[in-house]
Length: 125
Image 1: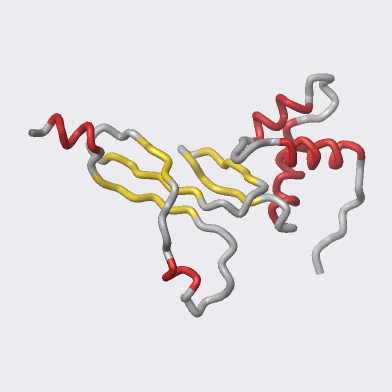
Image 2 (image 1 turned 120 degrees about the horizontal axis):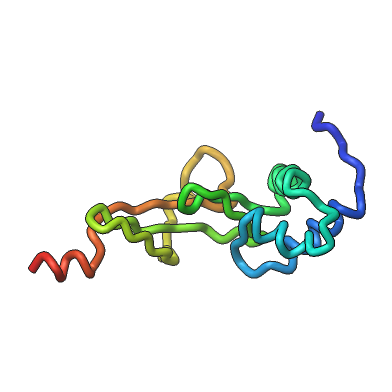
């Protein structure tokens, strides 16, 4: 049974600020938004984000070697060019195979597609 944590003013502030963000944000962005008065440390933000993720209130992804968070169950997809290294975010089309997998109930996913971007292809011609 997971350890129950008590509700504090700081945790409520962090949760409210996370809820107010648009789609994706980092722990540093959240910390900057709520710590203008200097009373909430970055370690508290990280612990709270981890707890919110564990409880399913936030979703966590890796983007450019950083953790990013979202309140939405949106998926996070990248196209990574193997020639120039550029990373482009994209919205996937239908990917019905995920919902048809017999391994559990998917919530969200992260997808990295590697290849050669259009600009590098055009330079190579």
